[in-house]
Length: 172
Image 1 (cartoon, one colour):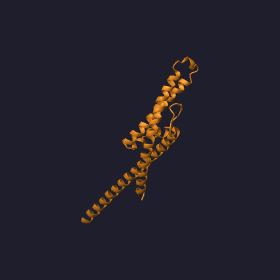
Image 2: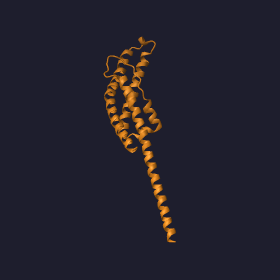
Image 3: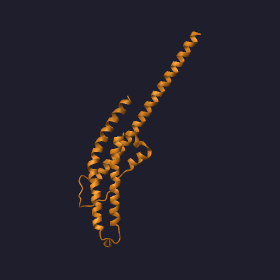
Image 4: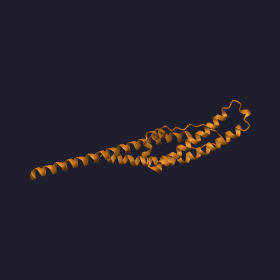
């Protein structure tokens, strides 16, 4: 009878240990998958910001109107998939502010194109003044982006590097 009880306890202990190890393994696997998704999002957004910064150029000319279209596919895709939420709140705020500036600059650019595309611009008394005013707004946003994107790229680079090291340690 004691032998049956000892075997029962041993079996129960082995099952509990197996369950705990399986649970621990699943949690590690899910955490790794989350970190890989997070890394993918950060790398994709970083590449997108680098491209947009390249399009902006180093220095703008307030007297020269430039029509730019910003690329926002990576951020839009990560928001749509829910992976953007994997990033910590502070990084989300920084990136959202930059992408909001892309949208705002795009709005001003669209207004410029709308006015410039008017067939009878001579009839629009204030068209030139409005275009210059709209360009001034877009230019100010471009300058803010030239200032903010490099900071975000630096932060993303730092976080990507840290996450890569963490993932390489996990795989050992």
